[in-house]
Amino acid sequence: MTVATDKRAATGALLGLAIGDAMGFPTEFQTVEQISRKYGPWRELGLPVSAGTAYVTDDTQMTLALGEGLVTALAAGPLTAERMEGPVRAAFVDWWCSPENNRAPGMTCLTACEQLNRGVRWQQASQVGSKGCGANMRVAPIGLVPGLTAAQRSGAAQFQSALTHGHPTALAASDLTAHAVLLLAQGTEPSELLPLLRGYAEQNRGVYRQDWLGDLAEHAQDRDRAAFAARGWDDCLAVLDRLGAALAAPDPDADPCLATGAGWIAEEAFATGLYCFLQQPDDPAGAVRRGAYSSGDSDSVAALAGAFAGAWMGAGAWPEAWTGVIEYRERLLALGAAWDAPRDGGRF
Image (cartoon, rainbow, N blue to C red; front, side, top):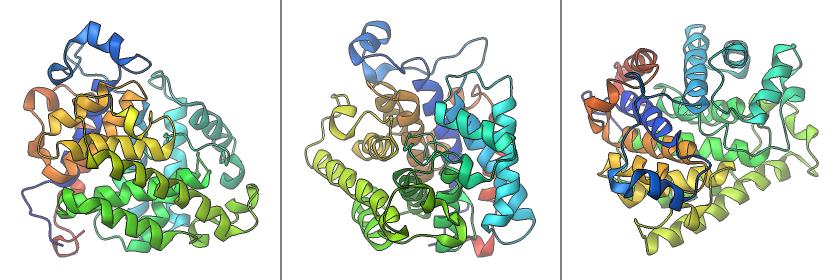
């Protein structure tokens, strides 16, 4: 599907992710009651600005690391695991070493990146027992790069997860998140999204992407590679059921985490971020506010809600008062501009 050249879906998604991340930064680890006492009604939640900057967390930092690593990898030719590993590994290690890595990063990312820094084979560095949301909070760039085949996009989404989070649900949720971003960037109506995502999950259940993952599954305890893959997709299918039930009777004034989960784990972060967006697809500010104003992993939920809303509505979704102060603004805009430029006939 051709994307309108003036939509700028990549820029919109990246800015939205960072805006949601920044909005949820101060509300993470707080109950809804605590957030209410401090900030008032959820529809009035503002973007926190300190000294002229809206600061983000590791969610945006790692999104940039992945995106900039992809730019380097793609410059060498068609995307493969071999081309992607070096630049993305280096970008993740640079993030791990950075003095700006002081925004409550996840232990899985820290542990895996420390081993990647030591040169450990990535399948051994990968934390196969972790399905924390640290992999799919950063995966949006995979859904925004134009010109990838379906197999490349799926493999790359799972591969970037596996560098840190090797649990099959982390892989599947990253793949599903990137696919949702792609569909919205292509112009898929939000009302059509859920059955398409279910079909994608069912189609990929049991598919092990050996050309991207190598022997990763052998580091887990499943009986074979197909069972390893199916375990992750089954978790995603179950949370899609919860999301469908929530959307059948949505309550925009209720904590979204009560419907689809707190978001600390991968499939719940995906579902709750998407729930915040799908309740109000034409109100991007409302989507990120609802994600940030929640009892769970508020920055990651709001970041995903912002990525979905921005992919759907484009760069114009966000107020200039917000985009002008977001941390790492120039890096976000540079990535967005590169991927919004016409490529492959203007097609995703």
